[in-house]
Amino acid sequence: MEKVVIKDSNYRIRKGKILRTKQLTKLEKLFEIALDGGESLDQEPGQFVMVSIFGVGEAPISVCSSPTKRGSFELCVRDAGKVTGAMHRLEAGDEIGIRGPYGKGFPIRILEGNDLLMVAGGLGIAPLRSLIKYAFDNRRDFGKIHIMLGCKTSDDLLFEDELNQWFKRMDVHYECTVDRAASDWDGHVGQITTLLPGVHLETERTFAIVVGPPVMYKFVLRELIKKNIPENQIILSFERHMKCGMGKCGRCQIQNLYCCQDGPVFNYADIKNMSEAL
Amino acid sequence: MKDLQYVILKKENLDGFISRMSRLRKVSAPVAKGNGEYAFEEVDSSDRIELKYKPTIMPPKKYFMPQEETLLEFSTAKGLATKPVVEYEKMTLFGVHTCDLAGIQCLNAVFSVRPRDYNYLTRKRQIDIIGLECGDYCDEHASCSMVSAHMPSGGYDLFFTDLGDYFIVHMNTQAGEEMIEATKCFESAEETHFDDLQSFRKKKRDTFKSEVQIEPRFIPGLFDACFESSIWKELDAKCLACGNCTNVCPTCYCFDIIDEVGLDLKNGKRYRKWDSCQLEPFAKVAGGENFRKERAARQRHRYYRKFRYPVAKYSKFFCTGCGRCSRSCMAGIHLKDTLNALIKESDSKIWKKWL
Image (cartoon, rainbow over all chains, first blue to last red; front, side):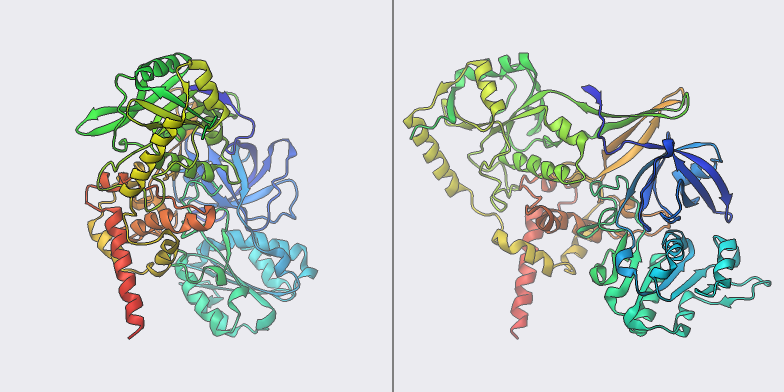
């Protein structure tokens, strides 16, 4: 067996340096990463990268910063497995491998000019934050912006200081609910679906963008349909354990679709009849 | 009819051809492994080669997409250094049946579609293929005629048809012609040889009839109608989720990517390894969700990956009818039986519509 180094390998790794880390909750940590040589990641909001910890492996992580942020990008990582566990032990100055970006992001060109109803559950705020930040940085391109956030408890809230700013903004309608409240919590209590009936929407010009765990989708979708949001104006983003990111390894396949290439962002109208999607 | 694309090789010259070829590069061919099983192995003469063999335990996929293959070498000794690599071996495969040629063509389609897989494509370019025609069924599990993989349709450099005392050989590529020039064992084909080939093919067409009572053009529609079929539940009760069927399949290519570090804890490699959609954790995510938790869903996925999804993406069936999945299944799940059951069920559905 002969072995040669190849230049155009799909598995070529870009070196990244961790500029800053921040422990957001017990389980989630934020990493700000710059690519070697000042290279740009050139991602779209909603795309993901494959992160390498050499000797441990690779894991798909969605980029949680907007492409309008220059020079570096951010990943919000939950300690949920081998690779993410190893990532949590890294600090500023450490090196990390990056492959990507991969996948189809949020359809910015279609969303522009419309109202956005962004619904996030738990860690779903991470991918959605890339779009929220993008919309804030291009605020005039979008109509009304509603952000509905749901979490288990107030201790699980991610990006807490940013959430407070969103709350204060006059050009954004932001609400947050927790399933179980601590004694010092003065916000909503209950499932995320309890927030939706109270939102006033112009349905024909509203796009709902929903990111969260599978169980949340089922209930949120029911509410959105009840509010008469057309099915093709509902955008979802899915979690799958991609290994290659290039539509080959088969791990992320949803019937005939590859989540890594055809997604992770999907239009609800396209996937609503697919049994393996949710 | 005199055709310059054809030559003949007398049976007594086969050994000369193989041994000369094996001096130029590695030659792999089907050899007997006992218990009626065969495998592709390196040979240096024609002694061990079986000209009549039922599909080998592993398809020739093992040369195109090895079970384990290094993608990247890395070192963390002085900062992070990575080196993407491809492993390959110059070789000639002799005696590949038409079903396995079809399997290689499927893999070619998958890895050529963008983003292309340079590891696969680099290795494929180093492998020459010599096909060998079957004149009769290998056993009851074969369903090559259903997917028209019983007749040669490209995907080889040379193609041998055994006509008794000699082989008639079709030259399909420049690489094939070069093999013939380099070994000097071949003679030009005459009129009588073509007559022999024609009567061989005629007899073959009478022998091979579609093994399943459905026309290929109706298969995608059959699967569209059968997603919620109770047949998948029946497979659920039988299947042991061992992954044999996908390992031996000539068109299954799902893989996992794994890191391995040497004992110095600094140098290591990243390799890909065959994976199987039949195994329980395959579609599991970090959140704990498993999107194909039931064995029924996983078996169904396997069948749809053969007969429905690739038809839309590659305009091909990804079943070559080789029968390996049925032969290797410990639980007795047989592809032909599953298809027949689906056909029977959908017939009754159509009939019920008229009531």
